[in-house]
Length: 192
Image 1 (cartoon, rainbow, N blue to C red):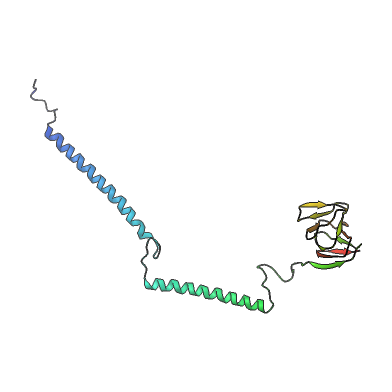
Image 2 (image 1 turned 30 degrees about the vertical axis):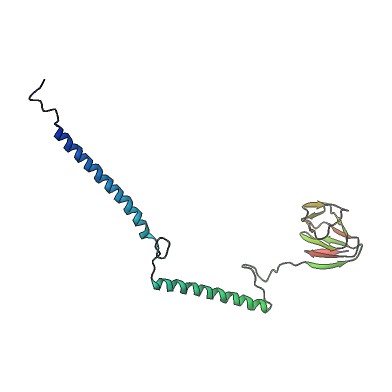
């Protein structure tokens, strides 16, 4: 049955023209997308600083300036080191930043002690037995801290050589020497 007068049907020629325009539109979109991606990738190198890995081409003046700045930095560092060397050769020692000469760092005092002598330490005093034998004297609040061994020593315990001992309080704690001995002491103390 053929109906004459109906215009709803599409002829094959009209469908082909629409498909062609659709295909052209998709192709143009794909080309634009690929062009955008490639242009974006190529544009990354434009923002790199001259002389970097992304932009290795530089001018002669840039190279000269870079070398000149590096040489000037090296010369300044060499001058500082030469001044320090002159101070050390002259017997002067550089103080660390913020260190003043009003409060010099405490140093260990070497003490030669006879058998039977007592060293009574002040608060915060450090003691190192270098030679000889000694035993600990405890105060009412405890004995000495053996910082090397990480333990507390009470009255009568032997003092090990070359161990750093610390007296926390000034309450009569210290050491009694059993033999002739050499001690290193940093801080306040009295000998009896």
